[in-house]
Amino acid sequence: MIFRQLFEPISSTYTYLLGCQITGQAILIDPAMPAWERDLEVINGLGLKLVYTLDTHIHADHITAASKLKQMVGSKIAGPSLDKLPCTDVPLYEGTRLQVGSILIDPLHTPGHTDNHFSYLADDRIFTGDALLIDGCGRTDFQSGDAETLYRTITQKLFTLPADTLVFPAHDYQGRRVSTIEQEKTRNPNIGNRKNLEEFVKIMQGMKLSYPKFIDYAVPGNKACGTCPPDVPENLQQYCESMGVSHQG
Amino acid sequence: MIFRQLFEPISSTYTYLLGCQITGQAILIDPAMPAWERDLEVINGLGLKLVYTLDTHIHADHITAASKLKQMVGSKIAGPSLDKLPCTDVPLYEGTRLQVGSILIDPLHTPGHTDNHFSYLADDRIFTGDALLIDGCGRTDFQSGDAETLYRTITQKLFTLPADTLVFPAHDYQGRRVSTIEQEKTRNPNIGNRKNLEEFVKIMQGMKLSYPKFIDYAVPGNKACGTCPPDVPENLQQYCESMGVSHQG
Image (tube, rainbow over all chains, first blue to last red; front, side, top):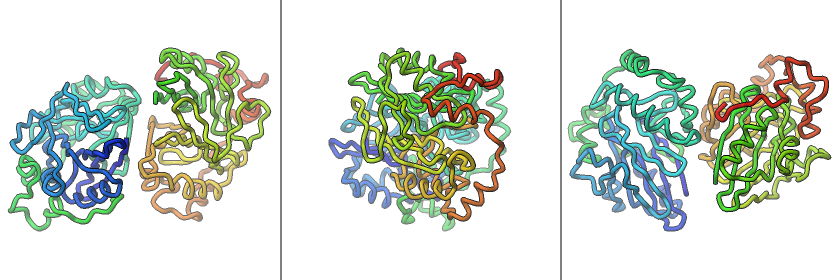
């Protein structure tokens, strides 16, 4: 499998490119609007053709490039069926595998950061979106977030994957790029080292995080599969417009 | 490829199991004596047959299980040709690929921690031994270590691998298990973020590390491919004897 971990520095988002060496088909997981040109450049440079974009959830910090990429190269928009977005071409269901050439993607419903959040398992790699981060996890204090639900998602679904499964999150704010299930089980400060539900909920409730500055534009924009709302203030436009992001960010 | 990252907690050593799904052949990279029974248990549990052990270098902190495993299951001892150890069955050379079923291993000469240190590249994974660690690197102040040489190894050889190559080190003392070349290039505090030779040498020289407590036994023991010297004091015997290390350490 051809694999690239691409970084979009404005929202610190990792976008994942998975390509089939046999058919030349490619998918992108969580493409971000400011980097759509960079993403296509990488795909074209590898001689691949983008056939699907997959979002893990309705992001609150950036606009997905799903619609833009569909408009540019005809890729199909895939995402959690539970979101019931009219703009989704291919709704994904847990238990129904998506096959793209030799790439096999198993969608997993991993709620807690948002209620309809999905992770995507491809062989020995799990793309965890904002459910499980490296030494952290997504916040649970906005949208449809719920700490108890996220605890069950991580401990009962993600932590039961094989220990050496590579964890690729949607974000990292400190330059870390990959982890494993065993690493997170052992040392994740929020939920690792056998923390119980009560401890986890207390940690999540104690975070005192500020209101996400782009959420009021990102959520409606992403419910439309990636439309930059017309009233975005100038200082926030970088979150939803192409900024010429370079290859390795 | 079947893949397992196994942890030996006495010396915090990672041992890597690579297995071929077609032939059932397996290799171990850097097996440690205290965990030889655990390693064989995992190999047997997967229905594999150990055919090679590969050491990255003459370790100073533990005794390799290479000879013990050869004695138990007939695996061949492979390692850097430059070490010229009479006990090595298969000397490895940079530029000469080792094939074990469908597993292809490219040995890379990566000196600096020791002069004959090798790393092993298998597809998108580099097993860096003590040359490059996660957020660190091997010390250069004993055996045949040399900071300038390690700087050249990391910046000119390891950092020129594809950005998404997974970095699997021989040790981690904080429970981290995997990194990537891009992550280390960006944020390794010793050598990342474009540190120059002078800065690196200064960092390495300023470490004030204590004399390794087991080195005087480990080095001769490993030059014999894993012989526990007869005069090891009782409090250090755990570094070279089977301690019933469990599956996930």
